[in-house]
Amino acid sequence: TNLATSYAAGRWQQLQAAPYWQYDHQDWVEHPRPVHVSWDGLILEKDDPAWRIMFPPNGWACHCKVRGLWLRDLIRMGKSGPDKAPEFKYVERTIGQRSALGPRTVRVPEGIDPGFEYAPGSARLRSAIPPERPDEFALVGRAACMAMACPIAARQTRCRLAASALPQKNRAR
Image 1: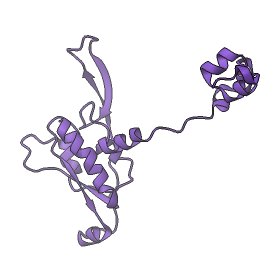
Image 2: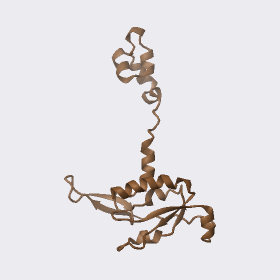
Image 3: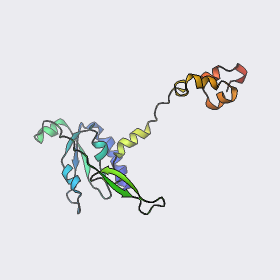
Image 4: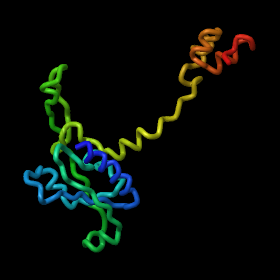
């Protein structure tokens, strides 16, 4: 499963060039999940929010794949555009029956195992780029920043406004 998730993250990256993605259920699976079978052949735009939920793998031993398509491929299939994204029905599942903390209930889309309701590639991209740091003055606020106008607080918080209010000899270096 770790290998499949790692593969999916790389596949997400590879597929970025294709404007349309097609869900591909593997017919050789001995015990197919009905929801995955219903998604077989489904074509959505690559930016469709549904992919953030249903990009495989969608559970333990899920062998579904996604392939990239272009408009010429859709035309060859007799389609003029992508399909409509499926409606996700959420179900409650109990997880952690053998956990030291005890079991808990989670809500997941039907047909997707708990812990698999995300797209590994998109999650990797979100975590690779740190969010922009907020401006310290806006974060702390003018009144709070002025209240910190003492040498110790200015050094600890590195607040530019508080540090600039200090005499030159007390400023943090």
